[in-house]
Length: 87
View 1 (cartoon, rainbow, N blue to C red):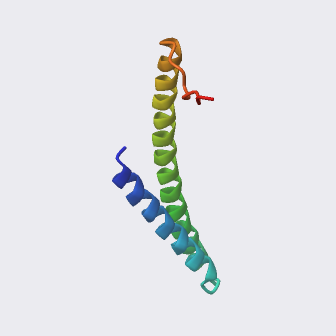
View 2: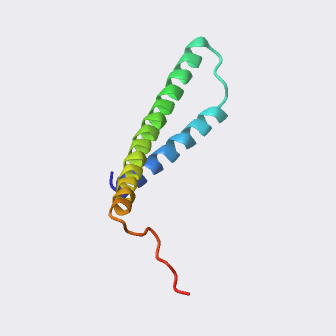
């Protein structure tokens, strides 16, 4: 996943979390119909936040796997991972 895509997802997630906070600060619903509508709206926001979390987590796991493979390859080739300082 490209950095710009990750950035856009993070910005979208922050916006959704802000909407949830605003949603929580609004006057409580009085009727069952209003309560049900509020719950559904909240669940939709939470579901989208969770979906973005999963996408970002997957991208992060893939990035870690690639870095791990590169480090393992370096170790297998006998290369030092850090440069030794001269005394």
